[in-house]
Image 1 (cartoon, rainbow, N blue to C red):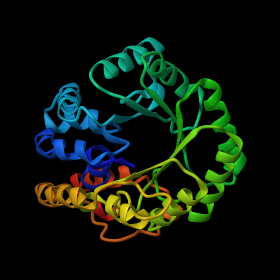
Image 2: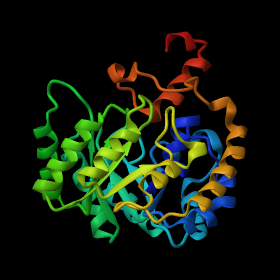
Image 3: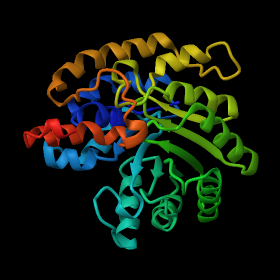
Image 4: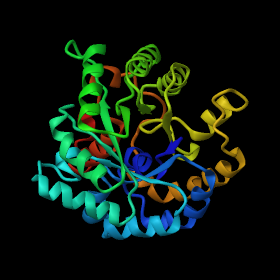
Length: 312
């Protein structure tokens, strides 16, 4: 299990505003759980640190590594865009990755919004050259142009580039349970590669998709601690741990340790109420709109600032 509480959970739930000061007090307990990895950097956190929080994102990474030495730290990297909003030169990509590894990053989930392997190649090669874990990504979407073969072809291209694992990234929560079963089954049947699944809970299908993927042989999944889960975010860690307990897929994680972490974030989350989105349950409109969970609270916040919340 990869817990995303320190990155994608708060990016999705309250616009990436979680401060380092609210992460460090719980870091030792997170480190003690035994997660496969902890996602804590990348995505919109780099921008939010500088633009809104007045924090140094590199200091955040170093402090988290110091506080959680046992658990591999994971980040989301936008391929050739790194953590910005345009393409950067290959030497900049190489240098950025080198610095990230030096400062404590272990696992790089590298994606491209266009699913173009050429935009992931330089970053993936840089990650491997510096001895870190390179995870290539299928950014899942549905359209007449996207078939099962599309994803199998992209998987093959990423394996040719050189990756340590593949992630299926369902950032909008539109991967149906049956599609998850088929996709995972076919990838595992055709390729010898570690496979990871990331789903958002926005449409209400994520828990079912994770379970069907686990039945199909997926190797790892993303969840978020319960008090930082659901709506725009992700399936709850404790729910999956309890679901799999005593089965061949038992995670071995201690539910009581997770409860203590959930209690901490339940209180911390209250500070960030002003940045929360309006969604209280699931939103089936996303099945058509396909807006990523990590965008929604940011989009709502920006509309609110412009007195245009009704336009959502």
